[in-house]
Length: 287
Image (tube, rainbow, N blue to C red; front, side):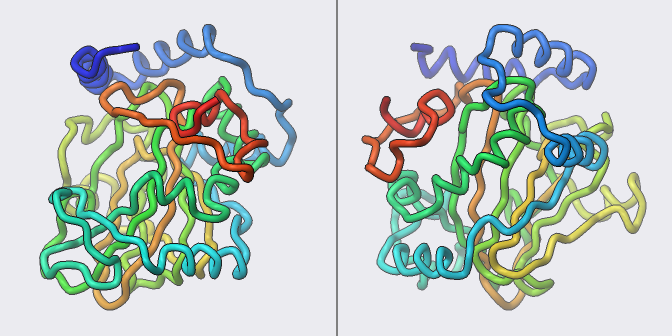
């Protein structure tokens, strides 16, 4: 087991590699020693992968039904959340502190919630993700969080940035509330995942991004609850700050490796988790 200190050093070492060609070469070398995708690549999945490689984002048929969303909302009704930047105090998700922009549910609550892990293990999603990565994926991060309105200035990930958690990774997003312009839609710059601009790991303003990529380069992803998409978040992206309505989003990161800067505590498998692949879910579920 990698020590936490060694893990952090490995994590920051790969983050320091800014060359896209070097990152791609190292990722290809990594896939040679990892399990191969479990399913052959079909034509529909190949088309999605082409979009991910060229545009960095691909929309999927809605993963959850309205009944499943209702189940999830009912389950989290009495659950508490934490501000990721001030995690000491938990609070009911319906009544955030005035200074709280976003609030996250615990991994334990996410794993215990109905349907969420099934979305993460959807066979079509795993087929696309596996062949995009070039190996059987590892679920290396899961998140369920609220973004709240009522603030004058953005905070942290509400500015444009790149994710650099592994040499190659992809994320699944699922909206669990209706998201219009007033609810803080996710924002992405298509094609930016293939650009070496803004390679320094920091936050960037809308103006900086628009000046480089063009005034029409920023796409805001609105949609009804259930809207689902895959995104290469090495590309420039952010969560737009909500102005009127809160947004609830579910996210899964699939990567080649565990994120060595994190500490994982696998939970006992529930009966509903029995069918999920042990390798893919090993960081969150016990064998």
